[in-house]
Image 1 (tube, helix red, strand yellow):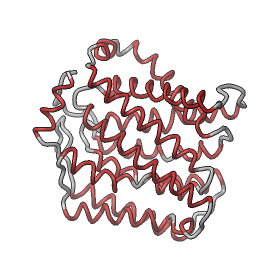
Image 2 (image 1 turned 90 degrees about the horizontal axis):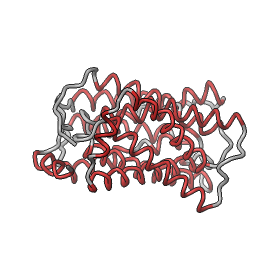
Image 3 (image 1 turned 60 degrees about the vertical axis):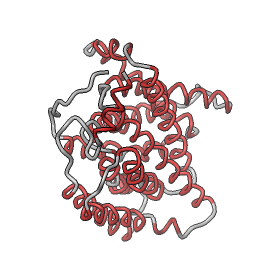
Image 4 (image 1 turned 120 degrees about the horizontal axis):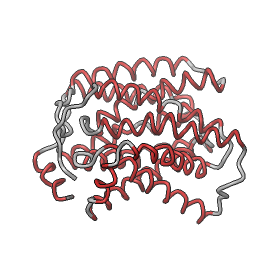
Length: 317
């Protein structure tokens, strides 16, 4: 893996906005499917790999790049895949117990963990006004989900599962921030999605979930999950993370509940409450403040990453 400092061909911020819009469809498709949560997660990733493989014809250099990966690089990709698999299992299961809005809000509280991870692993610092925006956006998330937090029992279990999903997906982004400085987006995405698929299939077999026998409608939702929130969402964020750190991406993803709440209203008929509208406006304002006052440098190294971290990644090759 060779380190590069090339500039992005398109603004990472535009790609981030598009990716967040695509990811906003995820909870809707999960809610529409009546298949078990682990099966939904499995075929989301399996179909993503299947749709990605034909692109190797136009990106034949990826095979060579993957073949040159060191044991450390493979280990990091496996770790990243384990985080991603855990994230999907936890989050999809949470949707069986709590509302789309509440689950999406909690699983996107990634900045709380990204702030900590970025500080300890990359020695990143956040400007005061950017931090204020981040806190405001997080408060907005809680305003959106306030109704569910008043309900105990199964809704609380769903909230806990969603929060654990936020922890694991933050681990996925942190590993990606580290390794993407030396591995192309295509190669990284293909390897990690393949690893995640294998882990999820193993999980299904171990717990006795059938891999076949689902309705045509479910297979359609699996395909939609692979195409929209995964390939047009997560995959684009894997490209963006070369120029943005985990905290910035996590802040952008906080906009997901806004899009999801609107889609849930249109498609599922779920009511968009006054707190959700107020919380959504607070989130958007907070995201604007964070991005406005925490601009990253347009280099091939994530903002806030010190030289020592860059030197460490060179040992992957």
